[in-house]
Each structure stands twice: as structure tokens, then as C-alpha cells.
Length: 231
Ligand code: 9D3
Image (cartoon, rainbow, N blue to C red; front, side):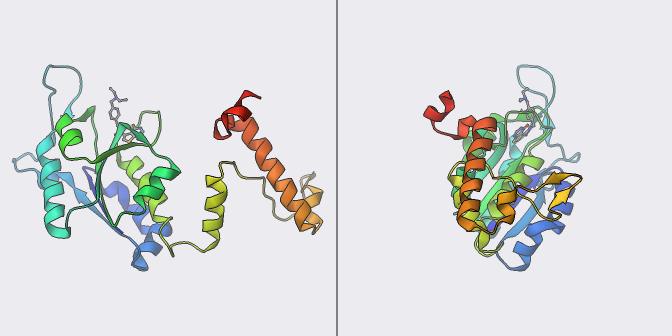
């Protein structure tokens, strides 16, 4: 998969790209992520990427031309992407289902905004999709873009071990994780639940399923069916 990111803060991506599973994925040829400076697509002397809003109001709005020039240049060089995604607080919420959908694409372009917003023509005529990572206000689309990249790339075959596919099914099953423990068997007087030391694997499986259910009912009843939510 090829992912191109357009941003006025390309350096924000450096440490994330240099570490983590993303480097592994790039070394294995599974993903190629390139970050492009939006200012390189300006044509004026001041390399201006924003301007005052028509109709007045506070803050600045990002100009459309550099975004269009960037996406068109990327299409010329690498072919048209399946999706051109605007990271935006108005976007559809990012979920595991959206990540799974995006992981099926061979090429993505991610557009990161800053300031109070981006000229509506970018949303309407350039982006094929808009994605938000949740209902809270950040200062720009860069961290959301990294969140999306992280979630998509880890789904690509061969990035992580085989064990993850099984865990994925568990999560898609809609429950939170059961509690996990490692040594020591007693830490500061707090013991590991005895069943986990028993070696009885069917008992352990039952205990884990029950705890996962309890934790989910307690913390995220919205993940359970509407019936369970009533309780
Ligand atoms: C005045 C209304 N604001 C929207 C709540 C304007 C605004 C604030 C912050 C517009 C953009 C931003 C910067 N945020 C993002 O670009 C962003 C974001 C976010 O803030 N939260 C969750 N997901 C995302 S994806 C992009």
C-alpha cells in the first residue's frame, strides 16, 4: 500500500515514521508512506497557505490551490489514489470497520488541515472522504492522520504476527479485553486469580469470556446489543 500525506508540518511525522511497526512495514515493502510539504505547492513569494475567510469571522482558512496542486502532482507521479481523505472534525468517525475498508486500498492520500478550517471546495471537489478520530478538538489533522496510518498499516498482511488476526475477530466480536496477568503470582499482596494458575484450559476460557462480558457491560454497554444496554 502507498500512502501520501499532505501537511504544512511534515516534521511531525518523522519520529513516528522512524520507529514502530511502520518502519518494519516499510522495510518489508508492505507499506510506503511519503509526507509532502503543502508549502511546496504554493506559487507566491510568501508561500502562503491560508487567507482570511470570505464573509468575515475569526481565524484563517486554508486556501484551495495548494491542496489541488499537491493531489494533482501525486496523481501524475504515482497514479490516482482510490481515496483522497480529508482529516476533519466534520468527518465520519474512524472505527475498526473504516480501517478494514481502507486497508483494502492500494493507494491513499491523506490531507491535513490547520487553522480554523479548509476552503469548502477542497472538501467538496478534492476529497473522496472525510474522517474524524473523535469528538474532541485538536489543532490539526496531523495526529489524526498518524492514527489512521497506524490502524491501517497494522492490518496489512505480514506486518505483525499471525496471532493478531485471531484477536481481531475477538474485537470485531464486540467485547473489551479480559484482564491479563504475568509474573509474579503475587505482587504487593495482590494475587493473580487462581483459575489462571490452575492449568485447566476450559475453565480459563470460561473465566476470560465471563470477565470480558462483565468489563464490557460495566464500561461500554454501547458495544453490546440494545437488549443488553437496558440492563
Ligand atoms: C470552529 C469549529 N472548529 C471545529 C470543531 C474548527 C476547527 C477546530 C480544529 C477546525 C479544525 C480543527 C483542527 N482539527 C482537525 O483538523 C481534525 C480533528 C480534530 O480536531 N478532532 C478529531 N478528529 C480530527 S481529524 C482533523
